[in-house]
Image (cartoon, rainbow, N blue to C red; front, side):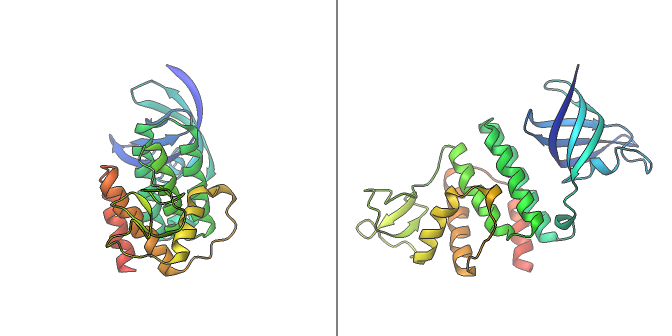
Length: 244
């Protein structure tokens, strides 16, 4: 047993006995860990507020590798109150949390956690959750080992490209275009920009609904084709956005 201090976000909670909870926490130091928050369901428990889903905190835990650890105390860094007021934002954060959990199984790179936290911060600040999510999804493809070609035609590297193809794996030039849907020229420019932008440094996002949709459609098709990931949170998100 080892005492540890970790920063992380609660991405899941479930009852444990009559008064306690088991929390799933995404952390930079240890990836996704399971933690028992004893007595967290009691009204006067100091662990009650810090054990709520999507709470970002500094957790003091009694750590057990490959077993449930025990939460001792925690200091909230951000409760993400704006996100918790909006079902759409909640749905996006739920999706990127589940996605991050899966990506961390493939790679333990610290940048994954940093980008995840930056994404939630930007959604909390009021930036378009669809765009922020698209950026994160694009970046995660590198860690999943199936990044699309966005520097030139996927076939011949020609930089004079005309559309995106999930089937071919990225940009396509006029010489290798077949029957793919032709996206707007702005979509071609912006998707490449989003791939390389530092999420934490974003101060403005001015992207049309058409471009957002074309980028989102490409990413959805690409993930379905190349990652093998099926996330229930993605289906829920699609339903929420559809109903909006």
